[in-house]
Image 1 (cartoon, rainbow, N blue to C red):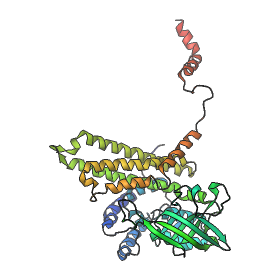
Image 2 (cartoon, one colour):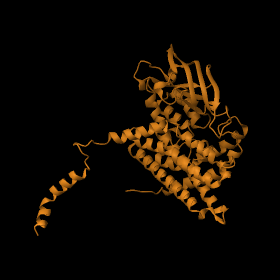
Image 3 (cartoon, rainbow, N blue to C red):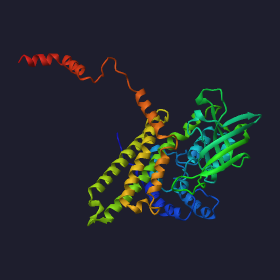
Image 4 (tube, helix red, strand yellow):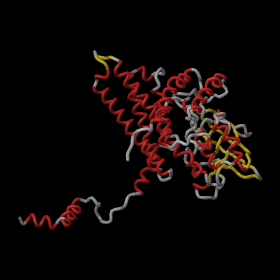
Length: 431
């Protein structure tokens, strides 16, 4: 049976989370200059008590199973919660589900040794440290076939050399998970391995912080341009088998894309809400904006964009919960990822337009939302790649036509229909 309702107990949790985020978490973005600056005494005083409230409610790190301190929620429940957290930078941190830590925790939980789990995973789950995922490179972007960073085994240590670009949250991370070439003679997708690198390791040089346009001071962003120069870490710091980086990476990417998508839904919903409020509040040419047909069209188009996308995301989350197979769901996950930036961009742009000059100013969040839309079109693989993945998935499931013409060729269909019902046609023709 189809069911679009949330069970009452979890709905109460969602209602609590919505109230909590709006009244307790969101105001802190105007008090704390950086959501990740754990060294700020004000951060230390304000954030941990809020995190404890999320833990007490059973909503801390719910993407993880009970054995790791989470609730083991499936993708549908996670999607509904992340919709509430969307658009408030501090909210995922308060609920223990911020990127890239969620994905890194899943990698450590699945591939880490007992020592890794004690040293890195547990502090990460407890909200005591942050981590970094260091994959993309300045010359190769997100295409690992073009990567040049290497890790060479020297005795009992990996020696890492190379450069990484846009390494997430590196500035505040206590450790990094680095993708590096360890098997240069293998086929392209079996050359890379994932290796844990403590941030304080000699040779890890953050050349500069790379900011997001519109939201960070140039050179002060949380993502980093990093150079690894003869960085030595223990042989045991590899995660998974040698050359299995792509398999390991899928542990963090599938579900993470659904989380990002529902946070995007939450952000787009806020833009739509602001658009609606502006339309019924602002007057021009003797009447409120909501009376203008073009404004009504923008409102309607935005609602349609949002609801169609939300249903796509929720259906994909439901299918992931049903099949427990990210590989099987690659096409749908790529569809979600490909649709996501356009939905946010269109809705935020319309909301900006309805707000006029106020909308383009720094006194409203629309330009940041639009910049975020472009970010979403690049993070975890560019939109173009995900469109190709979706198309190939659909084409691989399609059976070619046997004959010269399509199976829906009208003359052939007519001939088959007449043959099937020939007796009936003949009998009535003779009457």
